[in-house]
Length: 145
Image (tube, rainbow, N blue to C red; front, side, top):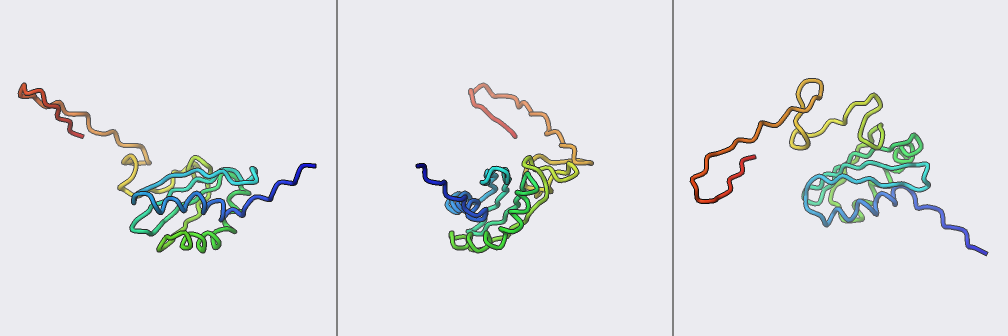
């Protein structure tokens, strides 16, 4: 007879095992999608900023059940991440879908140092056209960004 499958780990543990390895990565912004089990909890979008051993995260569940499981898992996750070696943890639960859109199609606010600059009404600002500089014939390549 087949043995019954073990129940899935709690959501906080499922998330922590994907987030903990970021401690060994370079400082910066990391974006992850973690598929929670059972499957009806759906994917969770994570934007994690690592700075000097501290982690600041925004989490967003794609389903109502997933969002609720995240809400109840926040305290456990706050306990598990320092045990993984993070010196400080800041968690922010966002309402929205897996593509980062808020409940009314609003994009999550981003820091100015990330992503495409936005103008009025959140419309991306086009980058300046590339400048072509004259060459002096010595076969160098100059690229200005």
